[in-house]
Length: 367
Image 1 (tube, rainbow, N blue to C red):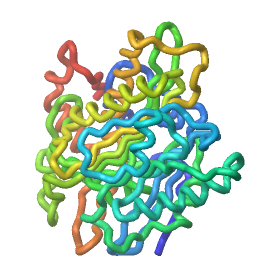
Image 2 (image 1 turned 90 degrees about the horizontal axis):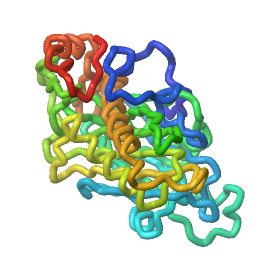
Image 3 (image 1 turned 180 degrees about the horizontal axis):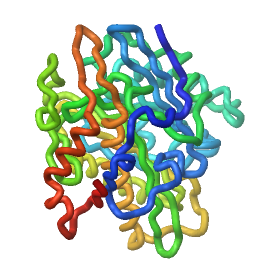
């Protein structure tokens, strides 16, 4: 079995949305256009593969110095609750995050939570901890991976946590996104960031998504199907009633838990822009946390508009990045998920360019 803790993405592997001239929204991004643009946030992946039937892994979003004695303000929102977001009730009740946020495969979520607890108890400041609330989300990667094998183990969790970096974030078929499928295409991990101005102060908001949900892809308001980009049916597709999306939002804006819950709500709303169906069997969740509670005084609710817009745009772009970075994968029982071909996507968008360039368009295509 291959299990790999991933370094940052290698340049030139697959192009991101902005590399193709697809610009969502008008706000500036951070330097990396990733959740790691938020100071004090790192990301690590471990990919677990055993060909042909296992394509899984774990992704860790790691805030610096978080723990039961040094919690961060946080909020959570559930769009559709057919999923396993471990730790959500305490997070919602207290409005605080005590651990890193980990993402994985559905039936591996419980092993991952146990491993996260073990890793946290070894951290400085946790020597006397008798209670700890691990936060672990999941998506069902059972189309491409032997989900019942529960291939993600403690060593994979520790590798992702220990290798977490504040540099560029690997996207696509890595970590928790190794076996996921969304909107008719191979999907995975995606990320993006924005730097909104709130009441005269500049902050950063970053998002990371694990995409695995149903619906019909929309890019800058234009419908994109496998058929429209020249991909025919190739084996069974995920059923329309299954799928999920996990979203993690981080910001250095000094927000309280109530405000962060409002941010998390917008993150789930943003999936609709990408074509999400929010079906009966979909678990659609967002966790939002702040890294600098109280810095520079609170942000008034009336000033949150640019942050809400930043999160909406960031999630939409991160979803598209997760598709563009993914690679065609054949996995469990011979099922194949085809990658979204960038050149054909551009052709589809160019064909409909007059509609995309109309005043009031959310996107700013530079095709």
